[in-house]
Image (cartoon, rainbow, N blue to C red; front, side, top):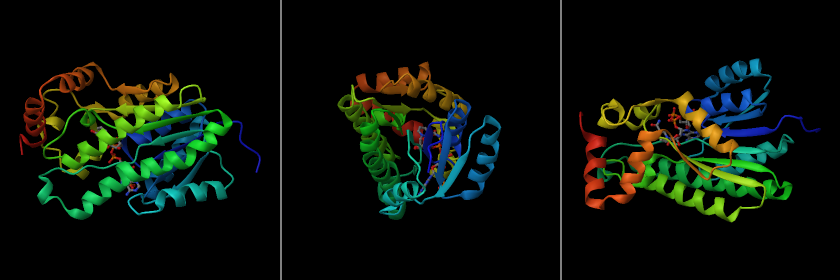
Length: 265
Ligand SMILES: NC(=O)c1ccc[n+]([C@@H]2O[C@H](COP(=O)([O-])OP(=O)(O)OC[C@H]3O[C@@H](n4cnc5c(N)ncnc54)[C@H](OP(=O)(O)O)[C@@H]3O)[C@@H](O)[C@H]2O)c1
């Protein structure tokens, strides 16, 4: 199949929130899209919208919480004769509450989607990009990556993994033509808070740091991807929070994180 002159971006988590907004940024900037998530209807609506920017979209349904789903997604892309130039790993989910009370199925879903599928997709698509000496990868971490988070222990640990993994491979890939950008948003207005049952937390009430829109986060993230920055934190206040978390004594950051994720319930 002849390659389209437009570069092709695979966006996971494209049915909602930051993933959908990043797909809009990519389409506006001349990319065609592969949109992937479990819910097809919102991706069909998005694909229709992206046509206005001249982008053609391929929708591939995938449940990344299932072992082997990342490999199956990559196989389906190859079977369609498509070559991925840009990989956006945006699919992810959280869960609020004490670890011992968290649904064990939700715990493995978080690890599977946030950690394993993201790592596997990156591993599977990276060699082709290196071979072509051209490619851009984005990993969605979070400001949650900068400190342990009581009441969101697994989520914060999963995002700490993403940040550590992203920074390490970005370094390994210097000079390869392939860049890795780890995007660390703070609280963002998407379906995330409802899925994680965090709507009533101080974090999402925006008291300390305002809740950003998904479009704003995507705009900042896309600029960082284009300038091949290894790490981008969204906004000055989130940057100050992330840096102070790293510099403060752990007992203090634990108390603050615990308050932010439980207060107001
Ligand atoms: N919102 C925030 O405050 C915030 C802050 C920092 C970082 N983040 C990160 O940003 C990323 C995007 O989240 P968002 O805020 O845009 O939340 P969102 O609106 O809930 O979007 C999450 C996306 O992930 C997809 N997803 C969830 N489970 C999946 C599964 N099993 N298989 C395939 N796709 C799955 C969802 O699609 P389906 O449900 O259709 O499968 C959806 O498209 C996540 O990695 C999140 O951790 C969010």
